[in-house]
View 1 (cartoon, helix red, strand yellow):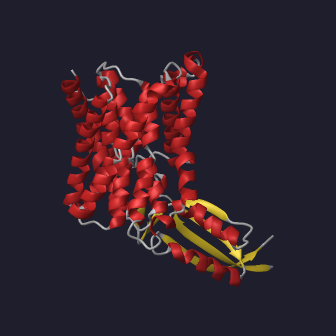
View 2: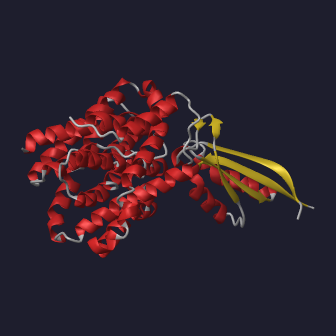
View 3: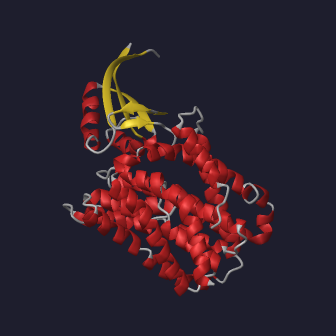
Length: 93
Length: 315
């Protein structure tokens, strides 16, 4: 089975386009985006309109690329709601 | 002072939100309603435009675009130096107040229709024109004191937002389609875009009430200066709008609409653009002031007051 790092990014919906651009630049071919809501250090994100909606962006990459993703997105960390985490995954098909 | 019952839908939404009711309007319905409203407003304006000598719009458009800039500039100075705000928040809030609210405008037209005061749907042209310039000015104001300054602004992204952002695209697209279709072509679209308009606006106001209730509940966190600003600024801007409307010799109805456009604060286009272009501004303050204070203020006090004042003045 192929092993990958799954990088999950949960952030403000307005960041989606900018983050996808960074992923493109890093040569990442696939990603999955879903809309979500919740609560964090930036307060409650109700999801009832675009400005209070979050998105969850998931990409599977190798370890070196996962570090590159982190480095590329850190510039958004100061001013926007942004959470990134990484986990081990195995692809089944 | 007249009061259109449609604003009660907003009140219902606010009550539902404050009472933590399980009422929730799905985000897709909200999106669909906003697309419908923008297209319907654009179409109506376009149909009227087809009967209108376009050259007559040039002087008022230039006058209105120039004079409206007094609003974001004075708002910035008041917030920056009177309210001691940081330049990012001052510029972001100034952009919200310089820009316009489509829903506030729609409620004003509904209220004029209710009072049987005539107005021209051509006013939609100014609605479309006024949405973006103040936002661009706000972005520039935010960057003035920064390293790189105005040159560091990503103009490509911003101009794309100006011309292809959802609201401008739909308003201008609707105007163009209405202009081509004319009265005859519009007749078959009217059952959906005209007859359904007020009902859709009522739904949208209900949803806005739900969204605004969170901002209204948080008004204490905005500070007294911003709360007073959010009520005084629209009144001052409306009076300025009436002065401009008098210069341009507008009818009573059009004077009320121009005053309402000047008074209204954006809470859809401006927040999205400022969040991207001025990330250091705190969106809770600008959206809180425009949606939590100014929008309900204009609905319940502002529009009735502006239409009363215009009728005294223009008569």
